[in-house]
Length: 84
Image (cartoon, rainbow, N blue to C red; front, side, top):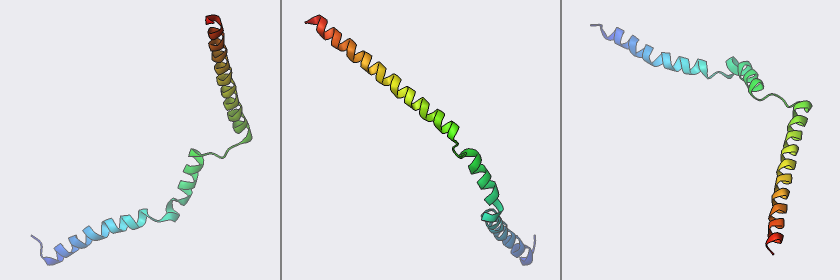
């Protein structure tokens, strides 16, 4: 078995190692460029072509839904008239 110096060295290692890792991995300047690139990749800036295509698709879907709704209303009205 070791003496008290060995035990003190082990205790210092047990305490310094996690604190050192915590300090290293929580430094913003080490990961700032990496985070900026990751955010740009995940959330790209909107460009006009994609935005226009997206808005056109939404408009077309709304028009299609409205036409379907009007068709169903007309069918319902014609069914009411045929009953009376």
